[in-house]
Length: 108
Image (cartoon, rainbow, N blue to C red; front, top):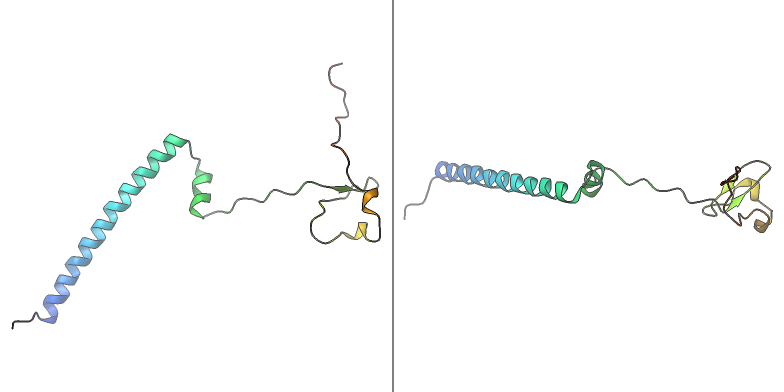
């Protein structure tokens, strides 16, 4: 039996590694072309693409205020610990019951 030498096996391994890397690059280029087509077709923005890839995180939207102190102008969304300005106070006295109206009447 004529078994291959270590050098022959290493040479074959090197060739296989080159072939594998070349195939990987070709597949990568095909994927990038497909992504480019999808970006154009669906109007995907750069930010959306970066978010989808996990490179940037979406910004959390601040919860709207549910409680407001007209004396100090402070507000609280009702999430998280109760702020100092509301400690030992009745929340119903500070609840925001309706959306604020514009100060300038429209249609006049």
